[in-house]
Image (cartoon, rainbow, N blue to C red):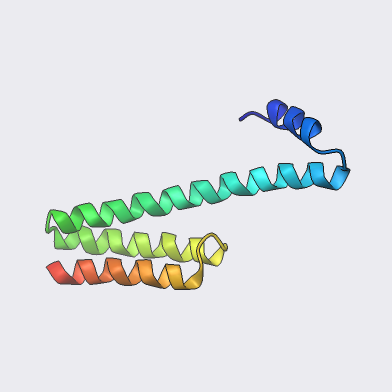
Length: 99
């Protein structure tokens, strides 16, 4: 959605200035969160593909990258700390199972 249509939508929906700003800020934050989640999912898929191919070296390398991405997402508040811990634990367990 481009900015001109977002602004038009804001002016149709909300009457109060702070409500208009909240709509714009929420859409910006939602786009950021979506991008971060997409990067996490991509890195997780790379680890799972390496595990499925039983490629130990690639799995370990991609695991390091995935842990970094997941931790960053948790630090930015995209994921809860327990979700971060669970995702990292499951990926590590999968990589260790082929090592």
